Image (tube, rainbow, N blue to C red; front, side):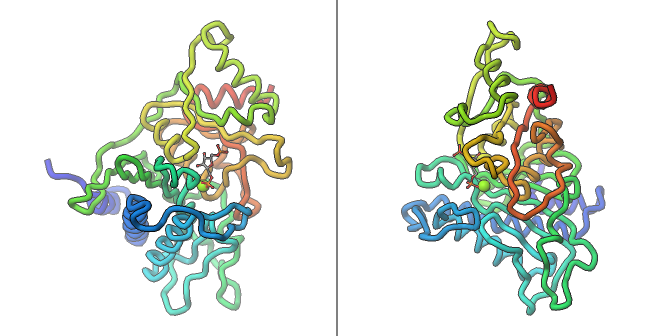
Length: 336
Ligand code: AHM
Ligand code: MG
C-alpha cells in the first residue's frame, strides 16, 4: 500500500470533507515550519541554539533562543502565502500584522511556537501547538490593522488545531474537526507520513499528570480529587493510579492520546490574579479540540474549555483534560 503523506491526506480531505484549499495550504505551511523547528531543536548545542535569549515575553518569562527562533520560523513561513489575515503567538505582545506587501486571507493562526521550552536544555521532548480560526468579517480597522478582538473567539470556532512533538520521533497531530490523525516525519523522504488514524482516548484510565510540588496551593476540589487518586485501591476510587509529569504539555497530552490519562494544571493560590498557568488561546483550546475529537473531555473544572469566551489574547485558564470519566469526576467535585 502506498504511504499517505500529509499532503495527500489534505488533498483527500479537500475532496471528501470540503476542506477549503486555502486551509489545506495553511496546514502544509505550518507543517513545513515545524520541520524546520524540528531540525533546529535536534541540532542542540551543535547549532548554538540552547540557552536563554536575554529577553522576556509579555508574561515576564525569560525566552529561550529556540523560543525566539521558532516564533520567527512560523511568522516567516506563514506571512507571505495569502492565506492569513493575521497571527498571534505566546511569544509576542500583540497580534502580528501581515506586511502590506503580501496578500491577506481568511484565517487567523494562533500558536505557541515552542511549548515546554524549560525542557530544551535537558533534551526532553518539546513541541509546537497551533490553532486556526476564521477571521470575522470587517476585522480590519480603517488603517488596515487587525485588532486583538478578531482572535477572541471561543475554542468551538476553531477550524483546525494541532501540535508537532519533537521527541524521539517528530510527529504532527492534526484535527480538522473530523477525528485526530497522527503523522510521523520521515526524514529521508522529508514528509510527514500518516501513521496513526483516528486516535481515541480511552474513557477510563489509571494514570494522571500534575505538578505535585504545587499541592499546597491547590483549591479544595483538586485537593480532594488528587488525594483520592493517591489513596489507590484502599481509597474511594478503589484502584491504583500511576503518575507521570513531563512538564511539556505536548508530551503529556501525546501520552494521553496514545494510552489515556488525566492531565491537570489547576488554578492555585501562588498568584491569585492568574487563573492557572496555561494559556487559553495557545495551549488549552487547541489541545481541548484535539482531545474532544479523540473522544476525551476538557474543562476548566467548572466549564467546557471550548466554550470559554476569551477576554484577552494571553488569558490563562485552569486545565483538566483527558479520559472522560476522570475529567467528569473532577469537574463534578468543583460543582459539589
Ligand atoms: P511554556 O509555554 O512557557 O513552555 O509553559 C507551558 C508548560 C507546559 O508545557 C507544561 O505543562 C507546564 O508549562 C509545566 O509547568 P511547571 O513547570 O509549572 O510544571
Ligand atoms: Mg506553552
